[in-house]
Image 1 (cartoon, rainbow, N blue to C red):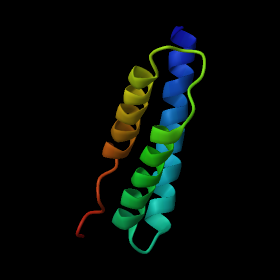
Image 2 (cartoon, helix red, strand yellow; image 1 turned 90 degrees about the vertical axis):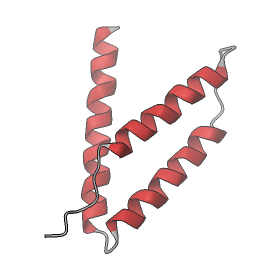
Image 3 (tube, rainbow, N blue to C red; image 1 turned 135 degrees about the vertical axis):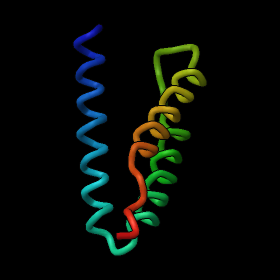
Image 4 (tube, rainbow, N blue to C red; image 1 turned 180 degrees about the horizontal axis):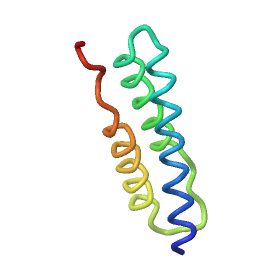
Length: 79
């Protein structure tokens, strides 16, 4: 289980870095991040979760994970 958690954390870090890189290349990084967050949340709300009775809990954890990943990215400095 620890190995799975470690791999998931590594994936989250890699994806967060990729999102930050794309956002920095965007003319309006804050708008890009906001639109991206909204799209990801829409996907999480609509994804089909099979094989479990408690899909609401899983969906809630997924939403919190999205929020955590995107909250790590701060808007660019005014420098």
